[in-house]
Length: 306
Image 1 (cartoon, rainbow, N blue to C red):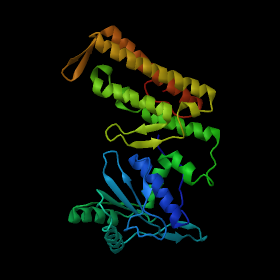
Image 2: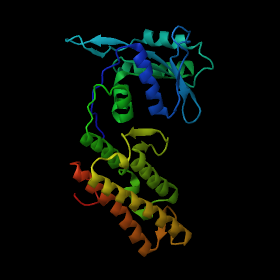
Image 3: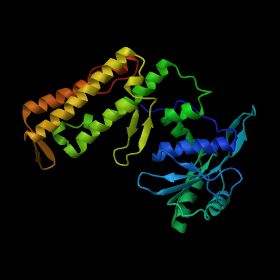
């Protein structure tokens, strides 16, 4: 259900591109306070933005704004960068101390496989992690994170209430695509099942969908269920959220009472409890489907409206 909604144009000025890169850093790595290096006029040691990922690794980004103009003289992404351009940019960054764990060349140039391959080659040669963020990658990030669109492109976007509701529900639908809603409950493990339900509830309340393994935000909507303007859709989503909460509580109680036991790679669950867990899970899917259908979106499988 994920889709590209907009084709964003690069910022007009290099300062705007640096500002956008700060926002991108937070969206990609979760650092709430990445910083620009120094102030205009000060030496930046070949790095414009730096910050840390959630494992404490230092990441440094150099911003290079390249531009082309179309037939109407409107700004468009610049042409592909060269290996020489990449090496010169990396050389500039070597005076930045301490040496970053990852160096990124963020550019408004178009995506180019040759330079992506070259970055991997240079990583191996230098023993340093080197990457390129081209404009195609940045455009994908912008489309995944509505907050970035609103922060940096609000003057050219025209969001109405219906469009916002659709964005929110699409995040919810993506959250419900996890295995926790497809695998038979006896095939789950508490270590995976309960955190998955918690992550989905987090997405419903905040609009923030995280990757299970890396914990990075992989999609950000304009908000959680409280931001929905459709009263009926909001009612259905809150019912789905309550069903998930009840599901988590019943599963925990079943563990405590010994009604859920491990048997190899599967769980042995008392039949009456298993029926109740499946009912609650299906109740969550059914209610989300009602919200999706209410706004004209396709329903998920396994919960009616198929």
